[in-house]
Amino acid sequence: MIHSFPPVIDDGCRVLILGSMPSVVSLKRQQYYGHKQNYFWPMMFTILEEPYSDDFAEKKRMLLRHHIALWDVLASCEREGSLDSNITDEVPNDIRTLLQVYPSIQYLMFNGGKAFQSFKKHFPDLLEQLAWKQMPSTSPAHTMKREEKLRQWQIVRALCK
Image (spheres, helix red, strand yellow):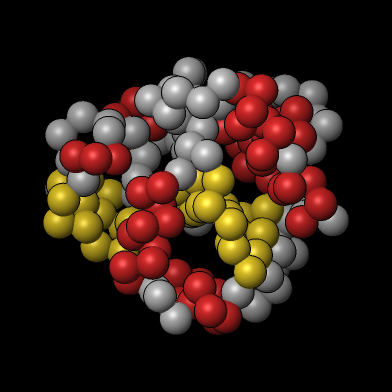
């Protein structure tokens, strides 16, 4: 059984980006999107026009400066390796309570298909209450070109203003 991380969030956040479950490398490094080939952090620094930093604390501060929260749909699961397709026995995070505690969250963004599928399975009613968008996964396993991922994720910039 593997477990996700606590959310990165504060009272000013308006956008919540939800992944599925941290990769093996991310779990080892104890950092969201810790695999060097995952495009999440380079993409977010580019979209938000911030100078890139490898420091995880600065990465989190950068998101919060732009009113963006980060968490995973799943609190725990069984998974061999890092592929979302290998996830079994999933247990969701308490996203319902998080949204009650942070009512400023107006928009959900799902980093990939598994995050969206798991959310839809566990919280179908919330999809009717909040604006949301399923985004292409930033994982290196998702083979869409980086330029296209960046183009599609540009919506973050408008939503966090």
